[in-house]
Image 1 (cartoon, rainbow, N blue to C red):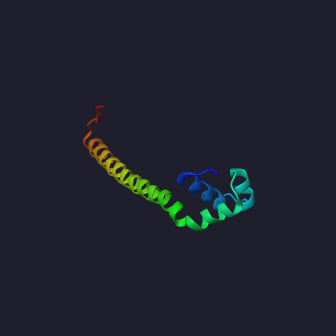
Image 2 (cartoon, one colour; image 1 turned 90 degrees about the vertical axis):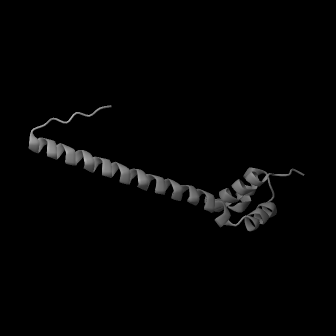
Length: 96
């Protein structure tokens, strides 16, 4: 009897729940019994498998929101400097 690791089982459950294939087909494709796959599905709740990617997405969204806010603030600073320089007839040079 082959002992499958946790990662294999979780991936099998994810495939069974998200691919739109019958469990019989998924079990056959993975080389496991249908009853074994059904046990894995009942053991690994879908929320366990979805929680990690959702947490990653939430962190990425927060990081992007912060970056967006910083870029908007920087843009406003540049716009203000340009408009005040034009009013005074000065030239603005950017240093790299």
